[in-house]
Image (cartoon, rainbow, N blue to C red; front, side, top):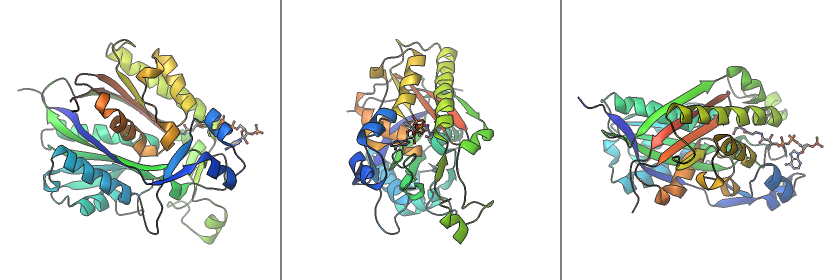
Length: 332
Ligand code: UT7
C-alpha cells in the first residue's frame, strides 16, 4: 500500500483595507519611521476597522476565496483548524465561527493557540489527519486581529503588529511533493517575556485590569529577540541537515515575520541569500498566525512543483519550529 502524504494545494488571504503608517504612529507615540524601519523593518501594517469586527471577519473571507480558487465546495471540507491568539470570543472557537460563516457543515473545527508558531503547529496537525487516511480536505487558517490586543500608548509594542488572515488547503497525495517533515519545540518558561496579563482564568477582566492596561501584549523585547534569533535559526538549520538540504537546493525560506533583523540573522546562519527568503514584513508587520500564509500567497506564482521550502516560526510560549515542504503545484 502506498503511503498517503499531505500537500498544500492552495493558499488565499484577507488583508483589511486600512493602512496604519509609521508616520501616523509617530503622531500617537514618541517614535519615528526611521527608528521603526531600522530596528524592526516595518513601514506599515493593515488594521481591521469597524464596530464588532473580529478575527473571523478576516478568516472567513480568506477561506471563501480559498474554496473558490481550489474549486472546493464548503460541504466537502472535513476539518477546519484556526490558529489564533485573538479569537472573536474566549469561546466558542473562532474556527467554528468561520465554518458557520462560509457554510462548512460536514466538518469539525477547532482553534490552536501557539502564538506566532500557531500556523505551523496547525499545519502539522492537519497533515496527521490527512496521513491517517480518514480525512481528505483540511483547511488551515492563520488569523489574528492583533490591533485588538495592542496598546497604542506603548511605543515598544505598537509598531510591531498588524491584522490579517491566511488560509491553505491540505489534501492527500501519494508522491514526494508534499509536507515532508517538521521539528517543533516548546519552552513554557519563556512565558514571562511575552504574554497577556489579564483576561484569562488567572486574572479575569476587572476594572483594575482595565485600568492597569493588562489586556494588551506584554513583551520584554530584548529577551524575546535573543531567543527568537537563536531558536529560529537553530531549528531551521537542524531540519536542513536532517534532510540534506543545502543553500544551493533550498528554493525558499518562509520565516515568521517578527523583525527584519531576526529574519536576516536566520538566513545568515543557514548560509542562504536574501533572495531565497520570503520577506514582506515592511508592508504587513507581524500578523502573528497569518505571516507565513501571507508570504506563501504573495510568492505563490513564483513557486514551482518540487521546490524545497522551509517554513520557520518563533513565538510566545515560547514555541518554535520548522517544517520542510516540497511544493506541490505550479501556478498558472
Ligand atoms: O512574534 C513574536 C515574537 N516577537 C519578537 O520576535 C519580537 C522580538 N523583539 C524585537 O523585535 C525587538 O526587541 C523590539 C523591536 C521589540 C525592540 O527593539 P530593540 O532593538 O530590542 O530595542 P530596545 O527594546 O532595546 O530599546 C532600545 C531603545 C530604548 O531606549 P533607551 O532605553 O536606549 O533610551 C527604547 O526605549 O529604543 C527605545 N524604543 C523606541 N524608540 C523609538 C523602544 N521602542 C521605540 C520606538 N521608537 N517605537
